[in-house]
Image 1 (tube, rainbow, N blue to C red):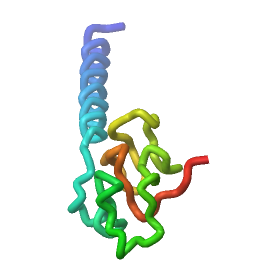
Image 2: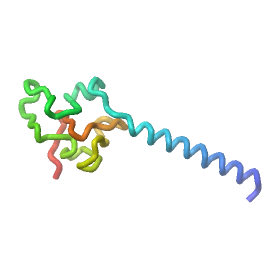
Image 3: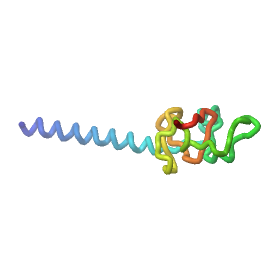
Image 4: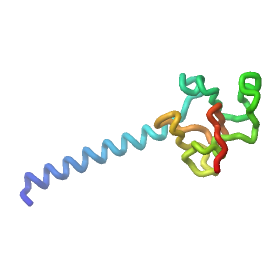
Length: 102
């Protein structure tokens, strides 16, 4: 391998590492309750604070951690949810799209 090819290869590896690092940093963004998507789905960080008048079928036992869409472990304080892209939802949170985990 020539010195030029090695240098090019190392620069590409460094660039890929930067992109991957930035992607991981974005994945750590926590969802804000005032985010338009969160508001549309009635998302709250704490299931006990869900609007009971607007969502009469809500039950305080329903939490993000026991939702089929939650992408974290049941013990994780925050985890991914495909409804909110790269933003993480609170484990004890809730939204109107809650679906019982199988």
